[in-house]
Image 1 (cartoon, helix red, strand yellow):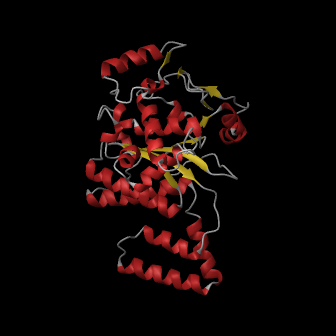
Image 2 (spheres, helix red, strand yellow; image 1 turned 90 degrees about the vertical axis):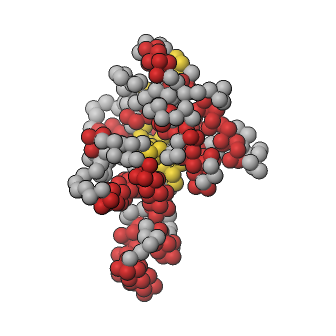
Length: 334
């Protein structure tokens, strides 16, 4: 369930993570999506990561995560986070929590062992995805009298520049999943994505949307309504300048893809985002050319490449200078 990823030191890191069911089986109906939705938020609280947005589909899910630097965490906070995982603890879990609390108060080697064990599961994207997938697998298999592996072996991750256009474009791409699948014309009408939760007032989802648009022009001048500014900006990115524009019909999608096959084709960003764009799932690193170049050496070392890679500018739309480390010259759009 784990995958290697670029490690970012000295600052917060943002990742787009995706994972799929075994063989892409369509296993998740509304009940399963609702349980998984709750787990995404629950495990984020435990791990100390921030869900900026997410989308759960019938056979996979996406989550955009901000992972902070590991900092000092008090014993009180460690216990609070641990309890988050067990909102209705069994007698055994209650006893375990009591023993942990007693050992932490006593100090010594036992207390330090507990701290290190818990801290190892926090502020790490791999540990977050591992916990979500394992917990959901246990629930799903018990609920459906099922045995065996639920998820494909690994999850994909893309390191995303955590501000401005790269972050905003990635968030919009994730929220548009149900539109690309033809389930809705407006992502606000799809229950299981961060944008829809923000629209109906979920505090955590609104916080994620505000974080995505934190550096948007004018936000600092209108501190009384930062959420409204973020919502409007996000909606304009999703729909283009026409805020009520419907999603692409299948016919229009085919026309768009045909145009995108041409070497120098350029379409409106809102149109291209309604097509499958592998840059956002397989590009490995997404951001400005400067951001991508800054991690090229680490990526080269991780992949064992002979030559230092150069950033590859995205094509097909006016992406405002977005680049990835992976060129993906074939079958970029679908």
